[in-house]
Amino acid sequence: MKLFIDTADIDEIRTIARWGVLDGVTTNPSLFAKTSGMTYDEVLTEICKITSGPVSAEVVAEDVEGMLREGRHFAKLADNIYVKVPMSETGLEALARFRAEGIKTNCTLIFSANQGLLAAKAGANLLSPFVGRLDDINQDGMIVIRELVSIVEIHELESEVLAASIRHPLHVTQAALAGAHIATVPFKVFQQMVHHPLTEAGIAQFRRDWEKARAALEQAAAERAVAGAAGSRAGS
Ligand code: E4P
Image (tube, rainbow, N blue to C red):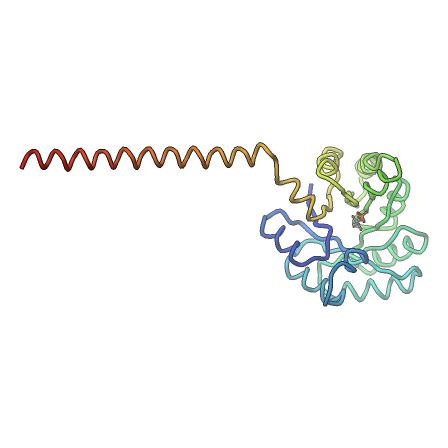
């Protein structure tokens, strides 16, 4: 499963790239609103310098021509831009038009397998079911991931299933087990995935034992030096 980071924060993206686990980036208007000082174009251009993997840029227009205008503009910023289009009647039409133009897309705000099926048929490269937002309303978001992965496999569709709205590490494990092609993960969840209390305790224990062993070796070397010096004094 590929791992994308779900953020528009350049420092967070750089950190995950340095970890060697970054396959792509998803942004949306809410994530962009958390950044400051740069335009959306500038943020996207900077992100595309950090990764050559897919970078999702979301349109805000709700009519087909507006979506096409915004998407064509994003697509010119870098080769790895994927235009993110919301699931809707106009969104489907825009996805089909983008496919005809060779512009890569990510259909967002998917909450059912049928919505995903339609997006795949319209030509979306990536299908983004929102797991966490379904969990929030007491529905099991992972069911949509499982269903959509099966539909894509059974019917040999070309789209990839991208588990979005990931809220905690268990979502990542479950998405991987469900066969999601990609999960887009917030920075905090990446950090939570790294840490485990037994790992931290193990590192501390190894450090303490290493220091103990080194101190014992130094002590033994010092005693040998003292004994050697005493021996040579006695022999002279
Ligand atoms: C990513 O493509 C989505 O926009 C994002 O995962 C939504 O996450 P949220 O439901 O936590 O806002």
